[in-house]
Image (cartoon, rainbow, N blue to C red; front, side, top):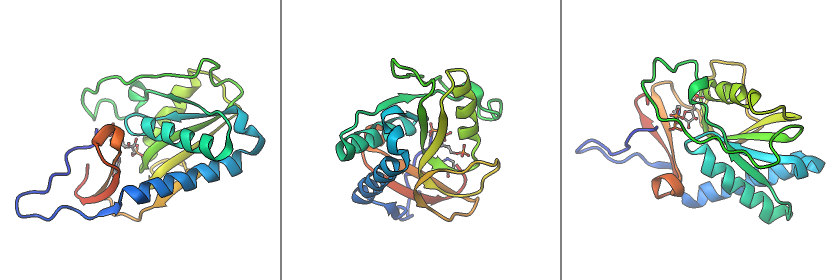
Length: 191
Ligand SMILES: O=P(O)(O)OC[C@H]1O[C@H](OP(=O)(O)OP(=O)(O)O)[C@H](O)[C@@H]1O
Ligand SMILES: O=c1cc[nH]c(=O)[nH]1
């Protein structure tokens, strides 16, 4: 879980890279791109969020795809905790929910959704978790922010915003559902 963004005493709060209206605009743009790229496969689309913030993001994207296309879009979440390759390095974390639509994911177009793409290790873990849940026709990736620094050959099919960063920085995405507000911040210091 991302840690606090409270500035130290005497320090200014980091400026938001994306404010609430920007987040809404970016999500809308991603929804349009999803509709265009999915084409006829829209009927088979399942948006599967990676907790924590990928889960509400997937639901938001689905709601916007539904609003723009009129199609009904299934959503789900996939817990990646036990599939991580850095499980021992990160300390104990609570398990999250894995929830799939009743029709499952076999033969469908699954779009994994996450807030930030960095090393790619969370997405790699999500791909392994999906393998235990079914066999989608295809899996794609949508992220709100791609901050670079990949450690695995993974790229996103839909990117809300590319944010060039140094490794010493941290990108923090806040969403109303989890944090009370929508914003994207870049803070100095590793997570
Ligand atoms: O590409 P990666 O290097 O894997 O980094 C990206 C992941 O890091 C964050 O999750 P985090 O593990 O901090 O958990 P959280 O979503 O619960 O905050 C973020 O939400 C992504 O899932
Ligand atoms: O900067 C980062 C890196 C990994 N995960 C995040 O949420 N932010």
